[in-house]
Image 1 (tube, rainbow, N blue to C red):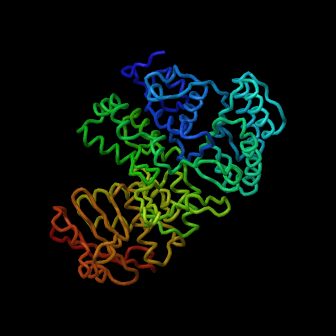
Image 2 (tube, rainbow, N blue to C red):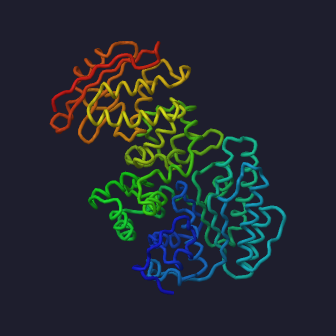
Image 3 (cartoon, rainbow, N blue to C red):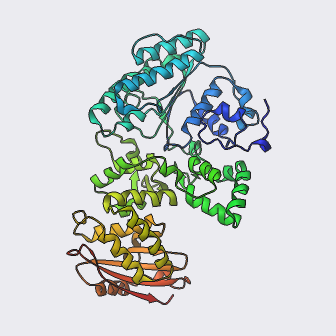
Length: 527
């Protein structure tokens, strides 16, 4: 079989089957050198967490093809030139993604049985046993006996049944109990296993796989596998060169500016202390298909549970873009007492932006503009809900006003937004109003930061456009003059003097009796 790189024109959107991608001459970013490091490092069991729609299923399919000895599929790829025995091993593939688990525990049993039956058929075996765990152990032993080789077990989306029922406590506990017995088979059958690989979004404790399998190697934060899923900048420019040129012809503009916009929209995911970032493949592929910049990945799922968790745990929304967590925090996934920060990271809504080696501490932030803006929208719907028509009209007017430096129009627009929030939702605190404005600015795509620390103090909210910098100071039931005086006294805008941008000082007072912006004063400073 021959694979001509110049012939690869089709985008593998929705295709997670490695043989189909190779046989159909679809674009493929070669991950096989990284995979080779995984499978030759040591025999054993491995776990990898990555966000949804990030290439985990394709990785599982690729691993399956390697252990089945299908070398013809890898001609021209990195692994074909590396040392590997290409021996055929029996492979058992289990994908838990398809089941609608909210329907009950029977769905889990049926999904597992269907996956085991597919593997049994491929291996020329019959499924034996009544319960999923007995069927699983019998299939491993029968495959080992028939082929005389140890078995590779690949489980995709191991946690889907738990995530689907996360707010259904009784059903979730039934799912966990069933999965505990099922995954426990992997410990029992260790002698018959060549390779075990599990993927998922989260690493839940108390599901046997992590509590019982003490030899399970979690490679989620391992720098050697930081790019095993996702698209690197080099892969983007090499493997998707024709797609880039095609998009440029339709969208227009400068190539450098276009690549920068791609980076800001879909890049930014980092999965280790190594400062390597990757693109979200789902967003990237759909952009190349539609030739538009849109929130493809975010719109394919709803983070309702995570948004509620943030509110319940009283996490400061303003600081979501600067969360600091320890490495140990990524190991604490108690399903009864989940922490929002590591879940936000594992789910792809936050990513690593810095690592402090001496303190063993990661700093998390939004990966890109798509997630930053859309997640702000989801938070705002719960934090300060307004009818969509009002939100839409405010969006356009606020954008124009701030780009034109028209502070009065911008503040009048914000007043209309606050006036549409149900009165019983608004809290009597400066932080509530500040957070709402921060989310509004972020939702509408502005470069907005709050609680900005500089040498002179801490700026409430700083907003930058291409031509201007706006420094906001907020007060509650005081005066706009007091807020403006603080900006002057602290010289908050001093770091931006000489930037060539227009500089605006904006003092805002919130009137809680009216549950809205009371007065404001704005002054344009010389830059």
